Length: 350
Ligand code: HEC
Ligand code: HEC
Image (cartoon, rainbow, N blue to C red):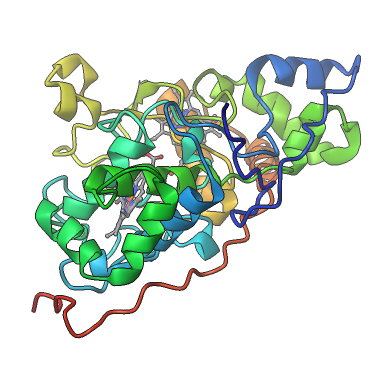
């Protein structure tokens, strides 16, 4: 039997599963058009392939997400760069510690990341489980050698209990792979349902005001939705940043080839995963470089370099108003109690 996930409707602390409201019958042409292109964020935590989520697994994942002692210096946790209080990002162009090999990229939000078809700007991790292994051992993020992670976890006695509860029946549950699974299970709870736009898709015609509806029409008719579609209004494909024009070296430095850097295929140079626009008004600065602080300017750049169009100030305002309707209930994350260090726990690297 599959154990139902601790469904949460925006809370990662488990509130039991909720009944998903049906899409109401409607003849509103704009709602019908939008339903063809976008999907509602479900109230309940989505399932991850191959993972049976339990409250114990999510609790372990949350603890690890906030655990700074997994970093070499014991000072950086996932939450440092993906702060749940800052819509799962860090509101700075480059995260502390992330300058380096790839030329510096902006922290994407972890909220709703579970709906993205791959992870990272260049899609180099196939899912959240694989992704979670990256930063733990990445020299410019947390810089822990692989062995350090398990060694550190075993040296904090409280983790043995947490892993045993999350992986019942396993003889030696404290492994890097299990840590990744738990983190992914926690991240899957970080969804933001009930945005005005979700209510609108469900059939509540008054959930968007006039300017937001005008913005939605423009978003569809001008062609934004061709790339920014699905549940996340993004996260379903790679596209070139600069289809109809060069965004310039500030927005798109020459040395970061995006997807082309992963595949070695020059035809994919400067392709990036189309980012989600969910909660976008909360996650400035924008672009993979974090080089544009202003959402309206970002919309203007998109129209010019992706579609070869110049939008009027009114059109930009309306699209920005529509994007504001994508802000949903933020997950209520209570900070976990982390296992205590004891005399035998390793000290941080100097
Ligand atoms: C020093 C800052 C930093 C830390 C610490 C960090 N991240 Fe990230 N994270 C980033 C940056 C920057 C990216 C984008 C990198 C890229 O695309 O090349 C990213 C990407 C991601 C993504 C991909 C999201 C998407 O839409 O593509 C997820 C998920 C994620 N991180 C989760 C985590 C988890 C889990 C941890 C802890 C194990 C963690 N991060 C630690 C900065 C950080
Ligand atoms: C051809 C595909 C395509 C079209 C059309 C398109 N976008 Fe984008 N959009 C992208 C890609 C790819 C990125 C990531 C660019 C980067 O930073 O590398 C992006 C980034 C963005 C961002 C920044 C997101 C963030 O988190 O940094 C916003 C906002 C945005 N687009 C809005 C729009 C709007 C509004 C339109 C229509 C005017 C539009 N896009 C049209 C592909 C597209």
